[in-house]
Amino acid sequence: MNDAIKNVVKVSKWMKNGYLERDYEYLTKVGFIKSEYENPRLNLVISTIDKNKMYGGLSTAVKLYRYLAEYLEMDMRIIMTAESIKSEIMEQYPDFVCMESGQDSDAHKTVCTVDVCNHSRGNISVRKKDIFMATYWSTFYIIADVLKFQKEKYGIDNKLLYLIQDYEPGFYQWSTEFLLTDSTYKYGNTVAIFNSQNLMNYFKKLDYKFDEMVAFDPKLNETLLSYLHLTDKIKRKKRVIIYGRPNVARNSFLMIVEALNKMIEKYNPDSEWEYLSIGGNHKSIKLKNGNTLVAGGKLTLEKYAEILAESSVGVSLMCSPHPSYPPLEMAAFGVQTVTNSFLCKDLSSFSENIHSLDIVNFDTVADAIYAAMQQYVERKPVNKESEYLNLENQFVRVGESVKKIID
Image (cartoon, rainbow, N blue to C red):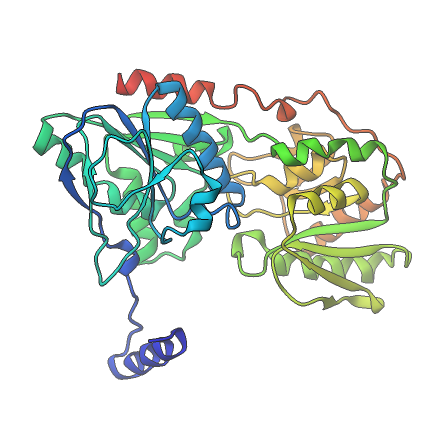
């Protein structure tokens, strides 16, 4: 049944029953079988490892996983939850071998999938010294019962590693999904690994309890770092770039569009200024006074680096405690960046190029954008000594904490 027919059926049931049914098949839990092998193994539970689909959070998860597996000297198994194994994916990971999910093996580096099929995810083999690392609330939810299995079969109390990269209940209204997501933070026997000190502080503020809490700080993407030299060569344009993702509510796309209109209407900047939206797919938008917000869509990292190096003003909002990557990347490339603060988050201390707003509405964002435009210069050197650019040792503290827990 295709998606269009499914939607018609859902609406028909809603009209008949008075409520809209939701499909929770994606929360089908994984089954477990006992393994014959004993080597310690670190298991990454992640939606996909297809590099063509990996941005920000997924990429960070794989980097952290590889670091931990090497640091802890453990076998590796990647368990995809929302993607079947394709030859093009395996070609991206030549050091891994493809295995059936229920297949027991002593191979040191494997990939399998537990994508839902016929309302089942099937079974995976579980060793006594298997440690599982979840990367999103739903991946935690479907794998967490493995601890009960290991206790029953091996008499061992293991821990789950939980990579937390945002306050994920906030992705939903107060609802069933909110409660389900929240429940994964209260499971127990969990080591919480936070993407940023800001985010960890937020969880502490909300009084969540974990067996261990440790944070690492974001670093500039390696590809972007290799293009930072462009800032020494390229003349900056009178260009405002926005991180425009209409389908991701926490990025407040409508706030930015309305603020641009307010700014243009109030200050009438000269016609040399151009406006470019990047990061998400949408059509170009007509702005006030004949201006256009050009839709740039999703970009390659190489093209993104070029745009950062030649732009002068950036706007990236994030209605959550996580700093998000774009404002940090913009600031690192010398772009005057307008963003927002949040409970436990104020990025103004990160860089002199960041203008963090405590009060966020159409007028305050409009005024901040125009103030940033007034600082335009054709050439602007960037700070190449920032700790944000030092890619070494990002996960050392995490590795040390995890080692103490699982040894």
